[in-house]
Image (cartoon, rainbow, N blue to C red; front, side):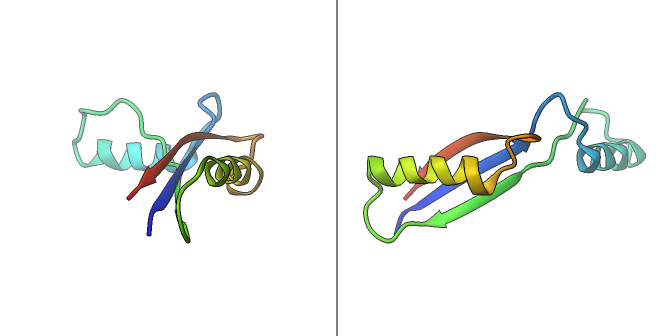
Length: 82
């Protein structure tokens, strides 16, 4: 069965406290290769049947209406994984 992966990230202009915490942990461990960390969400939706344009449109609607909070998050990716 195919899977549709939806990635959601905090809007770039908003503070990401989890990302800041991980960035601080990196610094305490002496890791200096990364200038910023942002943490988002990944949803994996298993599709019963074929992935059609209608299914993808429904996933886009659900990603915008249910899986993300449009005030503070952006849907940054919708991908079909076979």
